[in-house]
Length: 181
Length: 136
Image (tube, rainbow over all chains, first blue to last red; front, side):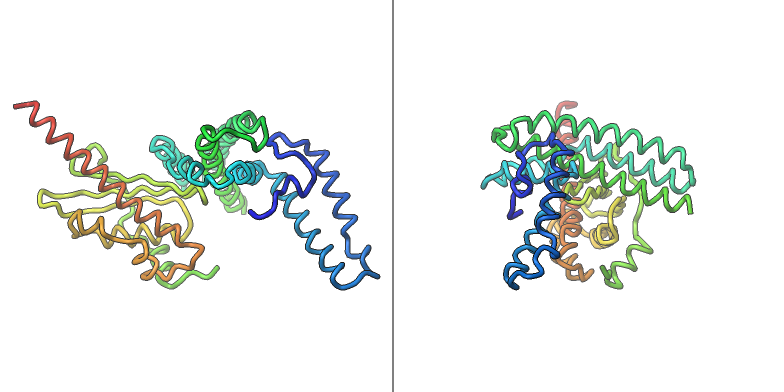
């Protein structure tokens, strides 16, 4: 990531973002950068405003999503130490993977049986775990992006886990749509 | 994104989906995941006395390319020796399936799964050799 989405919105790089305040900043910036305000401006000014508006929108999309927000914080904390992050992210432990595989298997069985109840039960379990990880990330990124090197692999692993949960819950949504149709 | 015909073929008609007994000493189980996309893959090999992979099974929860990569991997390693299977590179999978750059990580996952299954099998052999020695 080339730009700091937190800086773009003028907020601190933390996991526990004040959403109402961030949304307000996003709205104000979007209004200020709106093409209507640049009707009489030069082409280069119009282009610059548009580029900035795109950047602001993307920053808001990142900041409002816990997973992308955590990823962005990792990126900011990294500063040339990608190896520590990769180590944590890539070495998902076998037990976690085994468990994820079993959960996915149970989900595909519930789908095959068209058992919406079972699908939702599995989703509730994974959702609770995702919240647990978010709570851990909130604590881990308490000091913003200034996390210690030693904590990076662990945090990267948490973010990795969250991606598996997210993927699981996306699958649940797809199944719900399919079974409801 | 458009999948290649080979990917679709493997996706719709995956080879060797299933499970082998992971407590069997001649079975190696590889379990890998891609944090980037949340895909999970299990690949198992059954090795005979001559060191030849006589059976391979997989189960993949992921996109079409991940399923096709692991399906192809099991097809390729069957009948190969463990050493030959270990030499398989993800680039060969990319080439065979015509995977686009954004899907290369799926082939990496399949290569890792083969290596992880082989590592598990070898660990069991060492343990078995160790326990026979103790028995003497």
